[in-house]
Picture: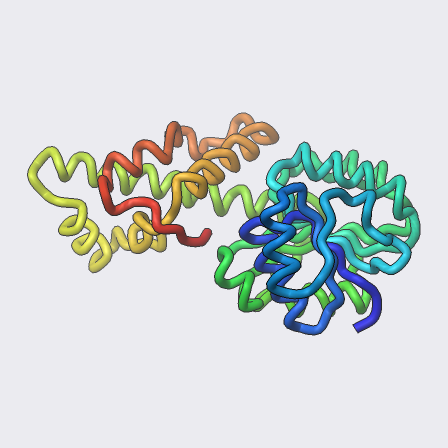
Length: 268
Protein backbone atom coordinates (compact mmCIF):
# COMPACT_ATOMS: atom_id res chain seq x y z
CA UNK A 1 0.00 0.00 0.00
CA UNK A 2 1.24 3.54 -0.70
CA UNK A 3 0.56 6.54 1.51
CA UNK A 4 -1.18 6.76 4.86
CA UNK A 5 -4.86 6.56 5.70
CA UNK A 6 -5.91 8.89 8.51
CA UNK A 7 -9.02 7.77 10.42
CA UNK A 8 -10.54 10.61 12.43
CA UNK A 9 -12.70 9.08 15.16
CA UNK A 10 -11.71 5.81 16.84
CA UNK A 11 -15.07 5.11 18.49
CA UNK A 12 -17.26 2.12 17.70
CA UNK A 13 -17.55 2.28 13.90
CA UNK A 14 -14.40 4.36 13.37
CA UNK A 15 -12.24 2.10 15.51
CA UNK A 16 -13.58 -0.98 13.75
CA UNK A 17 -12.90 0.51 10.32
CA UNK A 18 -9.39 1.61 11.32
CA UNK A 19 -8.55 -1.90 12.55
CA UNK A 20 -9.93 -3.41 9.36
CA UNK A 21 -7.72 -1.16 7.24
CA UNK A 22 -4.69 -1.97 9.37
CA UNK A 23 -5.28 -5.71 8.92
CA UNK A 24 -5.63 -5.21 5.16
CA UNK A 25 -2.13 -3.72 5.04
CA UNK A 26 -2.82 0.00 5.00
CA UNK A 27 -0.61 2.35 7.02
CA UNK A 28 -3.15 3.93 9.36
CA UNK A 29 -2.87 6.85 11.76
CA UNK A 30 -5.74 7.39 14.18
CA UNK A 31 -7.10 10.67 15.49
CA UNK A 32 -9.26 10.83 18.60
CA UNK A 33 -9.42 13.26 21.54
CA UNK A 34 -10.06 10.39 24.01
CA UNK A 35 -6.81 9.08 25.55
CA UNK A 36 -8.31 5.66 26.25
CA UNK A 37 -9.22 5.15 22.59
CA UNK A 38 -5.78 6.28 21.43
CA UNK A 39 -4.03 4.02 23.94
CA UNK A 40 -6.17 1.03 22.99
CA UNK A 41 -5.52 1.60 19.28
CA UNK A 42 -1.76 1.92 19.76
CA UNK A 43 -1.61 -1.11 22.05
CA UNK A 44 -3.58 -3.34 19.67
CA UNK A 45 -2.01 -2.27 16.36
CA UNK A 46 1.31 -0.60 17.09
CA UNK A 47 0.13 2.25 14.86
CA UNK A 48 0.27 5.93 15.88
CA UNK A 49 -2.67 7.88 17.26
CA UNK A 50 -2.88 11.59 18.00
CA UNK A 51 -5.39 13.79 19.79
CA UNK A 52 -5.86 16.35 17.04
CA UNK A 53 -5.53 16.53 13.25
CA UNK A 54 -2.92 19.29 13.62
CA UNK A 55 -0.48 16.61 14.85
CA UNK A 56 -0.83 14.47 11.69
CA UNK A 57 1.98 14.45 9.09
CA UNK A 58 -0.29 15.39 6.19
CA UNK A 59 2.40 15.16 3.52
CA UNK A 60 2.16 11.35 3.76
CA UNK A 61 -1.65 11.05 3.96
CA UNK A 62 -3.57 10.01 0.83
CA UNK A 63 -7.00 9.34 2.35
CA UNK A 64 -8.85 10.85 5.31
CA UNK A 65 -11.76 8.82 6.72
CA UNK A 66 -14.07 10.99 8.86
CA UNK A 67 -16.05 9.02 11.45
CA UNK A 68 -16.91 11.64 14.08
CA UNK A 69 -20.15 11.74 16.04
CA UNK A 70 -21.90 14.90 14.83
CA UNK A 71 -22.20 17.09 11.77
CA UNK A 72 -20.75 20.01 13.72
CA UNK A 73 -17.66 17.97 14.55
CA UNK A 74 -17.28 16.97 10.91
CA UNK A 75 -17.47 20.59 9.74
CA UNK A 76 -14.92 21.73 12.33
CA UNK A 77 -12.53 18.91 11.44
CA UNK A 78 -12.75 19.57 7.69
CA UNK A 79 -12.16 23.29 8.19
CA UNK A 80 -9.02 22.55 10.20
CA UNK A 81 -7.68 19.95 7.76
CA UNK A 82 -8.26 22.35 4.84
CA UNK A 83 -5.68 24.66 6.41
CA UNK A 84 -3.19 21.81 6.85
CA UNK A 85 -3.67 19.66 3.75
CA UNK A 86 -4.62 21.64 0.66
CA UNK A 87 -3.02 19.10 -1.70
CA UNK A 88 -4.67 16.12 -3.36
CA UNK A 89 -6.56 14.09 -0.76
CA UNK A 90 -9.37 11.54 -0.79
CA UNK A 91 -11.81 12.63 1.95
CA UNK A 92 -14.23 9.82 2.87
CA UNK A 93 -17.03 11.18 5.07
CA UNK A 94 -18.69 8.31 6.93
CA UNK A 95 -20.33 10.46 9.62
CA UNK A 96 -24.11 10.76 9.35
CA UNK A 97 -24.97 14.31 8.24
CA UNK A 98 -27.88 16.28 6.85
CA UNK A 99 -28.35 16.34 3.08
CA UNK A 100 -27.79 20.13 3.13
CA UNK A 101 -24.30 19.53 4.56
CA UNK A 102 -22.83 18.93 1.13
CA UNK A 103 -23.32 22.23 -0.70
CA UNK A 104 -21.26 24.43 1.66
CA UNK A 105 -18.66 21.71 2.24
CA UNK A 106 -18.04 21.32 -1.49
CA UNK A 107 -17.78 25.08 -1.90
CA UNK A 108 -15.16 25.43 0.86
CA UNK A 109 -13.09 22.31 0.25
CA UNK A 110 -9.68 22.73 -1.41
CA UNK A 111 -10.00 22.06 -5.14
CA UNK A 112 -7.59 19.07 -5.20
CA UNK A 113 -9.69 17.18 -2.64
CA UNK A 114 -11.81 14.23 -3.76
CA UNK A 115 -14.91 14.43 -1.55
CA UNK A 116 -16.48 11.00 -1.07
CA UNK A 117 -19.83 10.77 0.68
CA UNK A 118 -19.95 7.33 2.32
CA UNK A 119 -22.36 6.76 5.22
CA UNK A 120 -22.58 3.15 6.33
CA UNK A 121 -25.05 0.60 7.62
CA UNK A 122 -24.37 -2.71 9.31
CA UNK A 123 -22.83 -2.00 12.72
CA UNK A 124 -19.48 -2.44 14.40
CA UNK A 125 -19.03 -6.18 13.92
CA UNK A 126 -19.51 -5.97 10.17
CA UNK A 127 -17.28 -2.89 9.98
CA UNK A 128 -14.58 -4.87 11.76
CA UNK A 129 -14.85 -7.78 9.30
CA UNK A 130 -15.12 -5.62 6.16
CA UNK A 131 -18.72 -6.65 5.51
CA UNK A 132 -20.38 -3.30 6.12
CA UNK A 133 -22.47 -1.63 3.40
CA UNK A 134 -21.41 1.79 2.10
CA UNK A 135 -23.76 4.29 0.45
CA UNK A 136 -21.40 6.26 -1.80
CA UNK A 137 -21.04 9.16 -4.19
CA UNK A 138 -17.94 11.01 -5.31
CA UNK A 139 -14.92 10.92 -7.64
CA UNK A 140 -12.97 8.04 -6.11
CA UNK A 141 -9.42 7.54 -7.37
CA UNK A 142 -7.80 4.11 -7.53
CA UNK A 143 -6.31 4.45 -4.05
CA UNK A 144 -9.67 5.58 -2.65
CA UNK A 145 -11.34 2.54 -4.22
CA UNK A 146 -8.82 0.26 -2.56
CA UNK A 147 -9.74 1.73 0.84
CA UNK A 148 -13.48 1.53 0.17
CA UNK A 149 -13.24 -2.04 -1.12
CA UNK A 150 -11.32 -3.17 1.97
CA UNK A 151 -13.89 -1.53 4.25
CA UNK A 152 -17.09 -2.78 2.63
CA UNK A 153 -18.84 -5.98 1.68
CA UNK A 154 -21.15 -4.01 -0.57
CA UNK A 155 -20.97 -0.51 -2.05
CA UNK A 156 -24.16 1.11 -3.34
CA UNK A 157 -23.45 4.09 -5.57
CA UNK A 158 -25.73 7.12 -5.91
CA UNK A 159 -26.00 9.80 -8.61
CA UNK A 160 -25.23 12.96 -6.66
CA UNK A 161 -24.13 14.39 -3.33
CA UNK A 162 -26.71 14.28 -0.57
CA UNK A 163 -28.41 11.13 -1.84
CA UNK A 164 -26.32 8.68 0.23
CA UNK A 165 -26.99 10.76 3.35
CA UNK A 166 -30.71 10.84 2.57
CA UNK A 167 -30.73 7.05 2.13
CA UNK A 168 -28.99 6.61 5.50
CA UNK A 169 -31.42 8.96 7.26
CA UNK A 170 -34.42 7.25 5.68
CA UNK A 171 -33.08 3.86 6.70
CA UNK A 172 -32.63 4.93 10.30
CA UNK A 173 -35.96 6.77 10.41
CA UNK A 174 -37.74 3.61 9.27
CA UNK A 175 -35.81 1.60 11.87
CA UNK A 176 -36.74 4.09 14.60
CA UNK A 177 -40.42 4.08 13.57
CA UNK A 178 -40.47 0.29 13.55
CA UNK A 179 -38.82 0.12 16.96
CA UNK A 180 -41.37 2.56 18.38
CA UNK A 181 -44.27 0.56 16.93
CA UNK A 182 -42.93 -2.78 18.19
CA UNK A 183 -42.36 -1.32 21.66
CA UNK A 184 -45.92 0.04 21.76
CA UNK A 185 -47.26 -3.33 20.64
CA UNK A 186 -45.34 -4.99 23.48
CA UNK A 187 -46.77 -2.50 25.96
CA UNK A 188 -50.34 -3.12 24.78
CA UNK A 189 -49.80 -6.88 24.91
CA UNK A 190 -48.39 -6.63 28.45
CA UNK A 191 -51.54 -4.83 29.58
CA UNK A 192 -53.45 -7.94 28.51
CA UNK A 193 -51.12 -10.44 30.10
CA UNK A 194 -48.83 -11.34 27.19
CA UNK A 195 -45.11 -11.23 28.01
CA UNK A 196 -42.58 -9.62 25.63
CA UNK A 197 -40.99 -13.02 25.02
CA UNK A 198 -44.26 -14.59 23.90
CA UNK A 199 -45.36 -11.69 21.69
CA UNK A 200 -41.95 -11.35 20.02
CA UNK A 201 -41.94 -15.08 19.31
CA UNK A 202 -45.34 -14.73 17.68
CA UNK A 203 -44.39 -11.64 15.67
CA UNK A 204 -41.20 -13.23 14.43
CA UNK A 205 -43.14 -16.17 13.02
CA UNK A 206 -45.62 -13.93 11.22
CA UNK A 207 -45.89 -10.98 8.84
CA UNK A 208 -44.97 -8.60 11.67
CA UNK A 209 -41.40 -9.89 11.65
CA UNK A 210 -38.60 -7.41 10.91
CA UNK A 211 -34.94 -6.90 11.70
CA UNK A 212 -36.06 -4.69 14.59
CA UNK A 213 -38.54 -7.20 16.04
CA UNK A 214 -35.86 -9.90 15.87
CA UNK A 215 -33.20 -7.81 17.60
CA UNK A 216 -35.13 -5.19 19.59
CA UNK A 217 -33.42 -6.02 22.89
CA UNK A 218 -29.91 -6.11 21.42
CA UNK A 219 -29.53 -2.38 20.86
CA UNK A 220 -28.16 -0.06 23.51
CA UNK A 221 -29.74 3.12 24.81
CA UNK A 222 -27.09 5.09 22.92
CA UNK A 223 -27.97 3.37 19.66
CA UNK A 224 -31.65 4.20 20.06
CA UNK A 225 -30.69 7.79 20.84
CA UNK A 226 -28.67 7.89 17.61
CA UNK A 227 -31.69 6.65 15.66
CA UNK A 228 -33.84 9.40 17.13
CA UNK A 229 -31.12 11.96 16.34
CA UNK A 230 -31.18 10.84 12.71
CA UNK A 231 -34.95 11.29 12.57
CA UNK A 232 -34.30 14.89 13.61
CA UNK A 233 -31.66 15.33 10.89
CA UNK A 234 -34.12 14.07 8.28
CA UNK A 235 -36.85 16.45 9.43
CA UNK A 236 -34.42 19.40 9.52
CA UNK A 237 -34.07 19.22 5.72
CA UNK A 238 -37.49 17.71 4.95
CA UNK A 239 -39.85 19.29 7.51
CA UNK A 240 -42.95 18.09 5.67
CA UNK A 241 -41.88 14.46 5.57
CA UNK A 242 -44.54 12.24 7.10
CA UNK A 243 -41.98 9.79 8.44
CA UNK A 244 -40.88 9.20 12.00
CA UNK A 245 -43.39 11.67 13.44
CA UNK A 246 -44.27 9.27 16.26
CA UNK A 247 -40.65 8.79 17.37
CA UNK A 248 -40.26 10.50 20.74
CA UNK A 249 -38.12 9.36 23.66
CA UNK A 250 -37.45 6.12 21.79
CA UNK A 251 -34.86 4.62 24.15
CA UNK A 252 -37.14 4.97 27.17
CA UNK A 253 -40.18 3.55 25.37
CA UNK A 254 -38.24 0.49 24.23
CA UNK A 255 -36.62 -0.02 27.63
CA UNK A 256 -39.95 0.13 29.44
CA UNK A 257 -41.52 -2.30 26.97
CA UNK A 258 -38.69 -4.81 27.30
CA UNK A 259 -37.78 -4.47 30.95
CA UNK A 260 -34.61 -6.45 31.71
CA UNK A 261 -34.24 -7.66 28.12
CA UNK A 262 -32.87 -4.38 26.68
CA UNK A 263 -29.41 -2.99 25.96
CA UNK A 264 -27.02 -5.68 24.72
CA UNK A 265 -25.90 -3.83 21.60
CA UNK A 266 -26.66 -4.47 17.92
CA UNK A 267 -26.38 -2.88 14.47
CA UNK A 268 -28.38 -0.72 12.07
